[in-house]
Length: 420
Image (cartoon, rainbow, N blue to C red; front, side):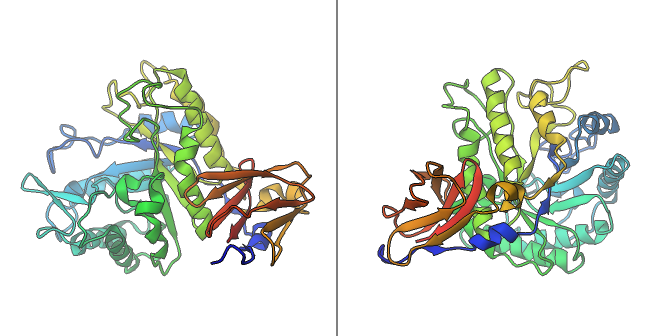
């Protein structure tokens, strides 16, 4: 589109009238059922499930949500076979224990689009492992669990990555959705992104997930964010060597947040975590969670649960002493109020007179309702800050922008979207 063409204001009026979304809870990953490389392994030898005392601890901290990782090979010992009754019973027992504490659970299939056959990992799309196999699993799981009231959502696959070109994650996810909906039309389905569910790389690897079809219209998209140099969450270096800074988490998650806002979709951060060996990491975590909260996106910290030992990201208490990370998490675990900040309703008194409109012949955008001198930050869809403009005579000049979709923010508050 020519730069001389006018700016089109995209659904700005919708920001004033958007229905509010209830604030969803922050929470914790309680790992243990995903432990061990021996498949299916022996319960309480190779792997375990979180205990009721652990549920009590996190509940007392204000926890409202648990992400429960579990393994495909343990719930279904044979591809296309029946669900293993012992493992299903363990999952159901955990769900009931959480329910008695008014806690919700995400069932997280922690398999990376893989399944171990005869000791060797197979990838979905290979000769021995098809999309139909994982669809079969989720169809049976949904049939068995669909009447469980405290399931927050089915996390259909943890961190898909390095898939076969012939079997893209979009196709796998769509068939899983189809299988679940054949038996369960009510439970939310949580779809992680490709490339390890990276929020930072979302536009490169996961943009097409917006085209997934769910007849129940109950999809939530899941991204993961870590703050070390390669975003792996291993933190082999110290804060400085990792190139960290206070807002690194905000910068890494912004492409995902912008994508959600551009497509009017719901999102969730399934994993994030920091070591406790430098107080500056606590600032990173605090800034990150504050930004998520402002944008009505909840998440689950990685991780709590049994058997972690001295794992650097663990927030499992030691000798009845809280880990340092908990001081930050507690600020957000108890955030349960109405959260309408996906629209301007959250700031309706501040922004009630805000009006934005384009000049059809000039590269200016007029903003009425904010004072002259107010700084407006303009981001592209990948979350990069393109420029900052101050209002002058109620307008900002955007002639330098190339064609594309842009987000206008006043601080961290989204005030408009424009297409040029």
